[in-house]
Image (cartoon, rainbow, N blue to C red; front, side, top):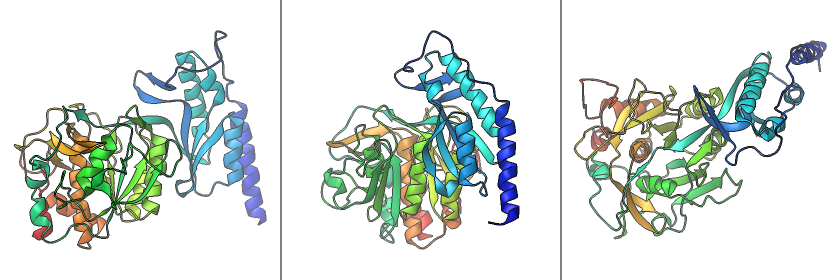
Amino acid sequence: MSNTRNGLHTWAALTLAMLLGVFVSLAFASEGRGQTPESMVDESPGRPPHVAGELIVSFAPDASSRDKDAAIERVRARTTKRIGELETRLVSFPEIKNERVRENREQALERQRQALERLPIVESVDYNYLRRKSLTPNDPYFRSAPQYGLTKPGFPRAWDRVRGKSIRVAVLDSGIQAGHPEFRGRIAVQRDFVADDATAEDPDGHGTHVAGTIGASTGNGTGVASGAFASSLVIGKFIGADGSGTVANEIDAIVWAVNNGSHVINMSFGAPGYVQAEQDAVTYAANKGVVTVAAAGNANSNVPEYPAAYPNVVSVAATDSSDRRASFSNYGSSVDVAAPGVNIMSTVPGGYARYSGTSMATPHVSSLAALLRNQGKTRATIISRMQSTAVDLGAAGKDPYYGAGRIDAARAVLN
């Protein structure tokens, strides 16, 4: 190693020691060490729900492993997850997690966040926010019925040209019922980031429903059709049985999906709370030519939800069978396109059901992206084509409620 490099490490270590030397020690109420509340989730005014005692830290690309370890050890934290491609770590603070009083946990975690943020080797420090499925469930409806979500945008006409063959679509969600008849031979690879397992079984049904809209077997005389039925599914489970998942696991799943050959990534989830490392993950996907598609949210609000609000993500609003905006659909400047998301029938564990939500709109857009990728189009062309061929709804041109309009698969593929 050169003298210059040794000098740099010495300077970094000294700077680190000086900065950390002035950190305030954690001060906890005497009433209580022990387990935190059962969910280990904290929330305070102006700060969305996040995992108690955890931070997501992104380091400068030239930071050494030694300096990263030193920074984390000095604040009495430990690394629980590493995402090397993004120079990002999930760090946990055992003392904070063991504090029983929420206010004390929140104050202590914010002190440590600010302390880490001041270090020259650190680029960003964010809370490990929760992302929730963007679903508004309706009563189940089993067996076949008209699927306007496919017919309204003209998918059957698009299938005359392409069907998604050789394209991989990642569904990052609550997993999948791999044994469902509609998914025989449809799954390329799967991973459970909640339990760290090689299979991604779905205890919730949300992921199975989303995956069915994209890749359920079609033309088999039973159940439902799907938008890109010749594609292969890449299933990354990061949402648990309670309908939520951590940003740290989501980031891990995004990078994994990209590295496993996904051409499109469907993200039917979201929540407020910007995280730099999460944006870095979708940028990583974009730089690899991957189209990322996410639900705008179901709060009938213009409060940005992530990952949909990031620049490199296609944000999807929901419409009904009459091309009206769904009453629950979020709106705002980040909305790119709209798609059917009310009373959408698809697969669920053990059968079929109708669900509503921007979660249900999103896989229609992912399906179209897969068809366009099947035509050999690049990421940038796919996104611009979905917008330029959309059916303009609401105010003329791009608007906060529909974006460029409701997608039109037939026009996008055939024209």
